[in-house]
Every structure is written in structure tokens, then in C-alpha cells.
Image 1 (cartoon, helix red, strand yellow):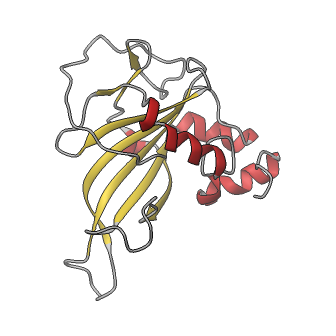
Image 2 (cartoon, rainbow, N blue to C red):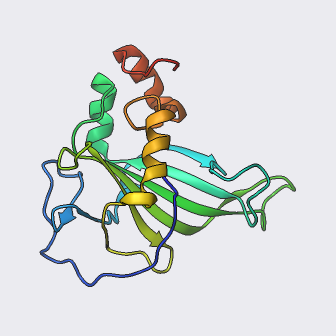
Image 3 (cartoon, rainbow, N blue to C red):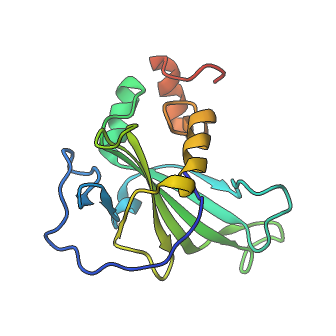
Length: 192
């Protein structure tokens, strides 16, 4: 996923405005491409968690470490297990959380704390290159919908998700439950 930047804002109620996708758990849109935030993503398939997976230079980041949790809609997860490919209308949610040591049972441990931001990546043929990235903003001011990132905001996402991913535009190399499925299906990019 892409943690290229956070923006604040809010949108009014979306009741009746969302356009349903073809899959029951796939992306929902307003205005054809603005993604409705999937509030139930924590009930989806958990793929992996990382700590401080950032574009910052080592030691450049100040403040607490950040956890990045990745979830995917269950129907896409099941499809990937079958054929090693993400179907159209796959949606990944990147949940960014602060870390904490306060209350840890040892001096070195860290655990996940408050939500920091929420982002998404969607595979959908409605987009010119088949993928879109979204930023729902910072915790406390999460937007109900987000428009696809564009221009300078999406360029680093596209570059990273093209150059460093194991399957299509996704970091399957960091999802242990899916890496073997991709190997079996022969869908890993060269070098993985």
C-alpha cells in the first residue's frame, strides 16, 4: 500500500448514494470512482502486519514507530488462493496504527495503539491501468469517501507498487499465507 500522505476532510451521509460492486464484499463507489470507506474491513482477511515499513531514510523518522496492518476482502482472498491472481474488484485496506511501549510486559516490547490513518488500494477495470490508491485521511477526521489519488500524490505509489511487488501491484512477498499460493500458480514476478 501507499502511505504517501494524509489529508483531512469529511463528507456527509452516503445513504443510498453508493454504487454496489459486482461482489458483495468488493469496493463501493460514489461518482463512479470515489471509494466508500469500508467500515467492516477489520472483519476481512488479515494478510500481514509490519512495523516501520516506510520510505523515510533510516533514522529520519521522529516519533513513535508505526504498525501497518493489511486486510483484503474475503472473496478476493479466496480467489487468490485458487489461482494466484487478484480478481477485479479486489480491495486492500492499509490501517496505520501508532505503537506503544507504555504498559508492555518487558522493556523492549511494542504493541499496536491508536489508529493514525487509513488507506486503500483497489484493483478495478474501471481505472485506466486497472488499479487505484485512496487516502481516507487521519484518525479523528476520516472521510466517508475518498477520490483516487492522482498526479504527484499517486506517482510514488505506482512506482513502488510496480517495481517492488511480487504479484501484480501487491506485496505478496510479505503475506506468508499467499506467497506459497503464488508460487504454486506461477504468478510471482521474476526475482521472487
